[in-house]
Length: 246
Image (cartoon, rainbow, N blue to C red; front, side, top):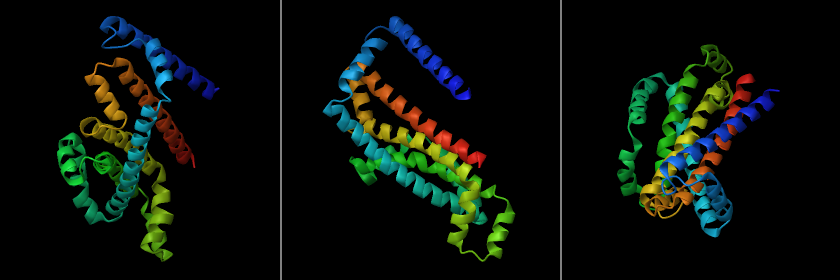
């Protein structure tokens, strides 16, 4: 019953968005906001073209590399700051300050260091994701009951064993929340990198369509990104809820 209700609510939301889209189209005009039906027709026609697939593959590859970096570095930093009190007291305020800084201001520095190729976009995407993963992992590790650590010391576990068998399993639901948020902002960072300094990827397609006033192509890419982000976040949220029930 709950699943049926959720499906119905999702369908109502999607229909409402399409209706709102049609209203905005009638107000703003074809150039600023193309009609839903023509946009969906354009989407179906161009979704399987070599150009779109090549750009989609580029964005997917960059996102994959960026997530590996963001998750790996973020988890390592978060576990260290959460388990080591002095390092956490010094490092957490620095991470919070960096997190509040608009990352786009650092993009010229990223380009100077990593160049205009895939490495620059991957680094910029990872820069967005590593901070929320690290901060939420730090908080999750600190929230672990001290008795767990005392049990690990009693069992004479090594630091690595303590991390893998005690700290991370106990903090896994909160850590997964950081991974879910990190996914969203990493995707945003990769797309911003493609928009400002790239000729490939979905972000570059959006900025090119904007410059050429190709509203249907711009909306097509936006729909694909919305669908991908919604499905990925829904899956991650489902796993997170299952972990909290364990």
